[in-house]
Amino acid sequence: MKINLTACDLNQTGLEMYDLISELYPICRSITGNGVRETLKILQRHIPLDIREVPTGMPVFDWTVPKEWNVRDAYVKNAKGEKVIDFKKSNLHLLNYSTPIHEKIPLAQLKEHLFTLSDRPDWIPYRTSYYSENWGFCLTHRQLEALEDGEYEVYIDSSLEDGYLTYGEYFLKGETSDEILLSCHICHPSLCNDNLSGISLITFLAKHLSTLSLRYSYRFLFIPGTIGSITWLSLNEENAFQIKHGLVAAGVGDSGNLTYKKSRRGDAEIDRTVAHILKHSTRPYAIAEFSPYGYDERQFCSPGFNLPVGSLTRTPFNCYPEYHTSADNLDFVRPTALAESLDTYLAILEVLESNKKYVNTNPKCEPQLGKRGLYGAFGGKKARKRKRWRCYGFSIYRTATIAYSILPSDRNWNFL
Ligand SMILES: [Zn+2]
Image 1 (cartoon, rainbow, N blue to C red):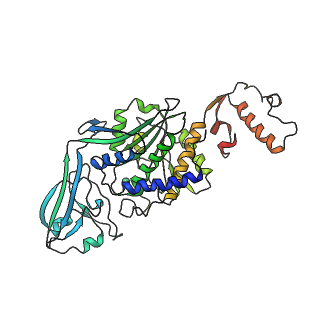
Image 2 (cartoon, rainbow, N blue to C red):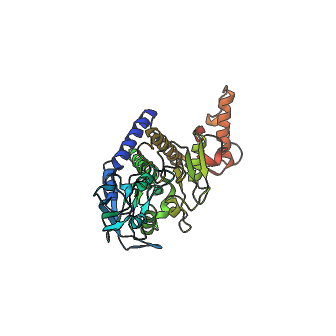
Image 3 (cartoon, protein in one colour):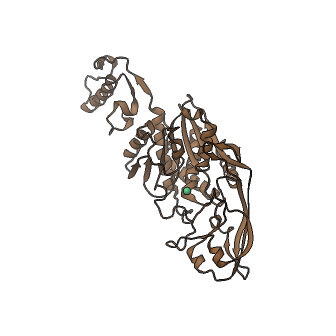
């Protein structure tokens, strides 16, 4: 089964993936709220996504679905009435989940609520306060240094009240009920690589796979980080074990090398498949062991689930200076990098789709090649070698899966 795009389609798809990121970039997202809904509605133009709402207060394992946060406007004005920090210029200026306030306060008090990056004086940091009610602003260090003593008007027109946690889910039925999970987080505001690149990749994967006849069923999740996967697992505790392989997509648009973080199991089929594809990709790559830091693989691989879910990114989270800053913008992600990431995901899925289990019906000694038309009388040395390998594999194992049991690990799975 071929599920890859051709080179020409891939280049075009990279541009379309970038266009989707550009469209989603201005939206102020968080772990709840209208930004998530608006994002998912845009994705519905590409794939038939179900939008699900889970009410505030619902217990989900050790957590509780939080209050819903929405923001309309926020700024800080100086004594002259000039806006010195303006949410409408960048949604990163507002501490995500800030509670409402409208007060005049002195600079010293304001500074207790300001966040900057002194080593990157022109970048705005991205900060959140989901589970501790607070308010604050993020600004460049140069903006901070320019603030003069005096009184400032602080205005945040936000709401934090009972509502819903919203997420998107698309289930694509295949021949079997065994599932492949593809998940991304949708909770960051204007950040391109961390958040939007994963959303775009999963959307275009889903769009492409929906045109094919597939062996596995596929479940695509667009969820707020951490609380979203915890909520989904809590609501789907039994069904989760249908997941036979999974990947969490994030940070797939920067120009760094591809990096695979293994599942907790470490030797699951998905771990071996990704390692195999990366090894034969001719591009530099890295493979990391599982750790309890990162994206939603933390929840999918938690000991009570221990699902075979890894995470394929480019530069890992927190390992590039632009991470969680305003520099993770539309210049930081590239259509070519997005296309290459998509190509790798498709190659992995192609192996999983093709990696069927075969039963050896003739396990005692080598099968006779000639009577099966597999041994040409005048065949070249190379051709004979290929055929011998093929039979050798089937003769060794009573059952075998194509990619791993038969072939030495350094052989391309297409060999057979
Ligand atoms: Zn992040």
